[in-house]
Amino acid sequence: MLIKKYIILGLVILLSFPSYVKGQDDLPSIQFGIKAGPNLGWIKPDAKSYSSEGSVIGFNWGFITEFNISSNYAINTGFNVAYNNGKLKYPYVQDSVESILQRKYNLQYLEIPICLKMRTKQIGYITYYGKIGLGTSFNLRAKSKDVFNVEAETENNIQDDITFMRESLIVGAGFQYSLGGSTFLLFEIVFNNGFSDILNGKNTIDTTIKENAISNYIEFNLGVLF
Image (cartoon, rainbow, N blue to C red):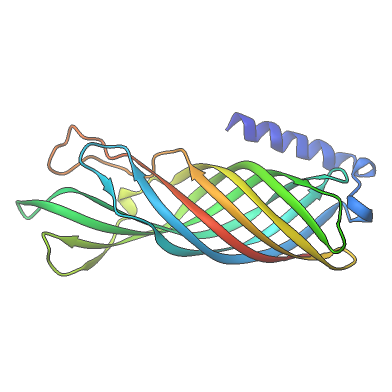
């Protein structure tokens, strides 16, 4: 969180001196855009007897704001709405019956990213870039599809089982295709690596086990930058 505060402070300073902010090839100091695409998410547990059951396809969309600070660098921010999913299997007790719970998580987050975007010079119509930064997410919805003791699948609201905030490292790469002027079509692949626990509570069979897991996902985004 301290790193993010320094990034925000630097951004405020840059905006205070717009005459020093020059974009690549006469780009405006500030650009806006939209993006959307599928993602592939999984949950990695760090608790005894908990195991990941693979990845699940989700979706994300968002609004882009870029502050061009030099010909090759920009501050990339905005907001993302991510439908972040995954599956876990672990011991569970229900109605005094002990068995295995297979849970598919369907989680929705609002994420505020702050990244440093590093661009090449424009080659023909294409500019390649990479970006790295941090993201803070706020849980908007948490539901699950559960199979307990090999019985029929049930849907549940698990808002109380999920932490409100999620912190992550963001690493991505992509390219943007010039459509003329300051308008670009962009495609990017982004790895969103969670590093904060997303689970609340303790195991219902062994209460000495604190539930602990991180969520990760890979985004495949298509967007337009103006």
